[in-house]
Image (cartoon, rainbow, N blue to C red; front, side, top):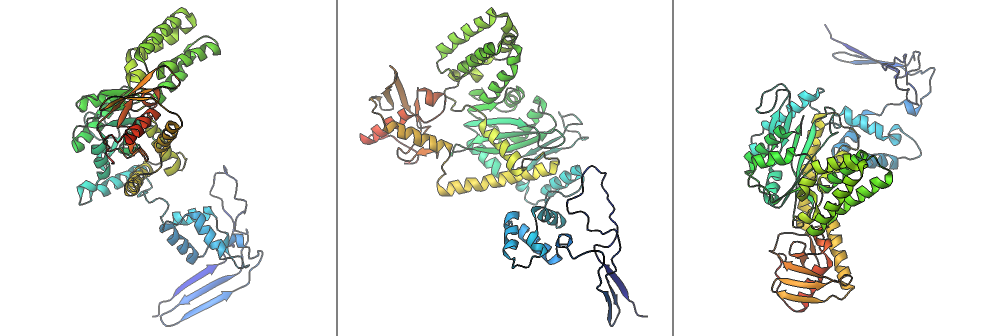
Length: 524
């Protein structure tokens, strides 16, 4: 007995529109392709063992052949999917199809970004990280996929603790993922001896899990994220676990400068796990300033009074001389005591910042050569606005995927800079600006010793002392002077507070070059 297969194709506009929505959103402006009637056009095929019988009714009724209701053909969809997989941006794909228009408009000529988005989703190209519709299962599958790699060093997940599992000293309901790739480990070990910054940010997932990032400063003066921790809390217990796992992989880290926000959890956990204790523990000036602004509401006085207090705080923050700072601080506290409207703010300021003045006052951090956590703020901004496209990310598997993508891109950016000898950054522009400023004025330079010079100020009645330091591997140099900010130190405000390579250093360097003096430089 012959087996036959019958297939019947109907007009895609035939039938009644049945909405699946809850009525919260309006219908799209083109309306439904269904005509709420039945179109008689059809194709019926009967496939037998020997022959194929086709019946075709070409008559369409009640509707026109409108291009807006035509589907994108399978061939075009496959072509678009191939272009997307090749990394061609949507706007380029749209432009290519529009260039193929020859006064005969087809559906492919009027595709939109929304069409490309739908095709990406259809072919599984939109969310490569999405291994399961349930976020928790998808994350679990990602972590297991990394763990199954035969080369254990390629597994970036060094700790994975889910809610409901036991991991001392964390609680059962705590969640934590620690990410440290092989390249991050290498960069961390190379640059952690100088400056290390740590900060946390929120808003990267729907579960209110916090993303904590450790950043080091490389030889180009730019921040490099060397470790990530996604956790349900950022208290001392969680940070202790974070740093302990890093220590297991890299050994004890010994940064000269440790910078964090105003919360004590980072510092307390660090000194508990790592040794020796960093020489400088600094609080980020941006966080300090932000906290002061928020707490000005503790002052019961007028806006003028609040403005006076804030201006004085900023002067204290930037004062470079210890004696001047202590005198100003003493008079400021007396002023707060004299005014009853300022008593609440004084209590806050004394209990929170006065006893920790060495952590935030510029005069006590002159040798640290770092001011703010802006390298971390810049990274978090890039993550949220570039990789997460400025949208509120919902899924944790998406965050995990994009963090690894950030590290990949950072690796290639660093490789490009190493191959090209660096790039023109903000720091390079500042150095060049100070060099041009040094050329515009004549300065009196006196050589005190083989590694010490005195430069007289042209605007103030004082001399600046410049000392030569040990050569470094810094790549951010003045092209003319062949000198970086670490080769010399200066007692001026521009160097001590702004951490810039001041014009006095350029003056000394150029004077030494003119006199054929040997001033060693790592890049010479």
